[in-house]
Length: 353
Ligand code: ATP
Ligand code: MG
Ligand code: FE
Picture 1 (cartoon, rainbow, N blue to C red):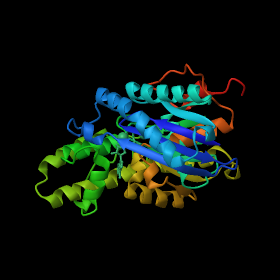
Picture 2 (cartoon, rainbow, N blue to C red):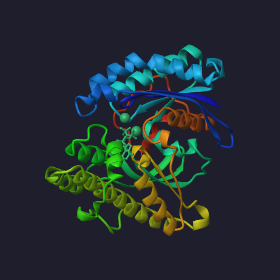
Picture 3 (cartoon, helix red, strand yellow):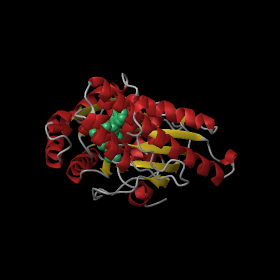
Picture 4 (tube, protein in one colour):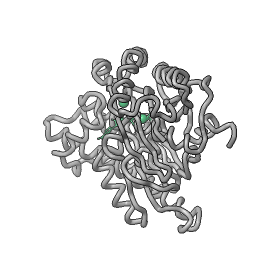
């Protein structure tokens, strides 16, 4: 199956063509991403109206490039997948409407994809990964642990009670004057720091549920940022923040691994921890999680770096997996600004299961 994917839920206009074999081997034929970071930089965050207008300007050109690079022609496509939510609804509507137009014009089935489901399958873009697995989804807007049984069949084990992990990185980085988005900048700064001298709050550590909280860390780190005098101070603080976030992600994943392993006989369920979303690009987060997974007898996998932050290849792949199972969407499918992953099945399920 060969699918064109479109992603416009936040500040990336992206299009990609992905091929999926029946045995689950994915090949990215093209992946084009236009980032709007420069359009929003002056405002210190994403401005929804600017984002929507930029998607309108960029979507046709980005799609054309993805189709040219993939070199399969519209006749070589089996379907069109577009993010239908969650996200900034003005942007989502641009990609979804464009996808509907392509589907209608070319007589192709439309697959409305949950953006989070795209992140959930993104590790499959780099390696063949069987279901089920345990997923830590850490992005700009979400921080969740999920039991992933298959496409459209995921349930949440825990979520953040305040900020998402990426949001914590971004807000602390902003308080430190690092600009937007802050995660990558904070990671670069942390490389030359040693955070041992800072004692940051350790929220929820050891608690038996799988929830997250970053607001205490955010407040403490933002206050400490005001006391930093030298570049070394700031690098040390960046390292302390990164370590604290990685530690919490790893501690909560530990809880989830225990619950996941206890929920069914081990031979029944693959012991694999997968991390996805923008924060999965962080090397300290990756290595901390990998070590924790190993201690619990779990394998560990992260997506290729290029597919951690928003992209359309993950949307095309989720669309292809749905198409493989006959799950297509009505042409009048609406954009959904809020769309919990547990409900991904409800919207895009086939009329004939
Ligand atoms: P959502 O998927 O929840 O709708 P989003 O699409 O905006 O949110 P992503 O594109 O998956 O989120 O990820 C962006 C986030 O990842 C930002 O918060 C960014 O700071 C963070 N991030 C990206 N790279 C890194 C890194 N190397 N270290 C830490 N955080 C990072
Ligand atoms: Mg983005
Ligand atoms: Fe995302």
